[in-house]
Image (cartoon, helix red, strand yellow):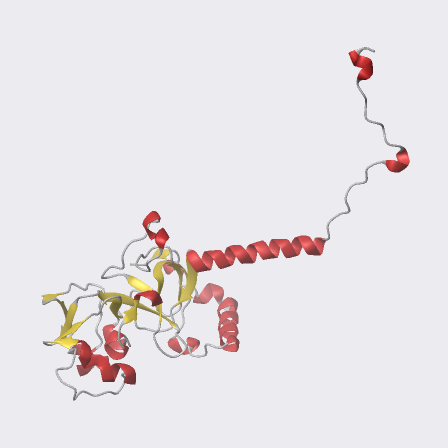
Length: 267
């Protein structure tokens, strides 16, 4: 028998036995899968890369205004001790960096301030002027409001325990002098001293203490939207207040948007 004759050809299925295509997938399943992928990507992005944040107070004016909406770069600072840090473009937190962090008390709301003191720094404020290790700090971003002058914040730390505790967190008031050495506040390891640019309108490290490194989320990168608003617009942080503020801003979008601040880089 020839080689050609020995080759077996696959049988041709009868018409009744033809291969049927798989049933079409449900549109609901496809939408659910797409939604799941979108949610996972969003969670990954907000956890490791960027996160949105809005400015609710005047403490960082004129650098950041009430109603500025920021994108925060979470992919920037080292110092958490993770093994992968040496393989990624991280850098240390630097003096002058604007940071978003979790407030150390209450329900840990997010705050934004500027880093003034690094671990090991010796800080002193004399007549509104900041000194680091005995040298005056150049702060071109700072503004002062004589109407909001505060003798405690303008001359810090206090020389003794007989200082007014109004406006201070009780936890900080009882421990503040533990960090004072020869008239200087000494920043402990893994902690940072932060203040607002609107120095006389800022509730900051002078009044509640240091920021833990693990509480730092990242650094504001850009203002992606800015709406003309006041601090009162953000007093209600509940769901209803947030939705009410969002709806109001959306209805007045053209007139209330600060177009000149759109895509403004944060420094």
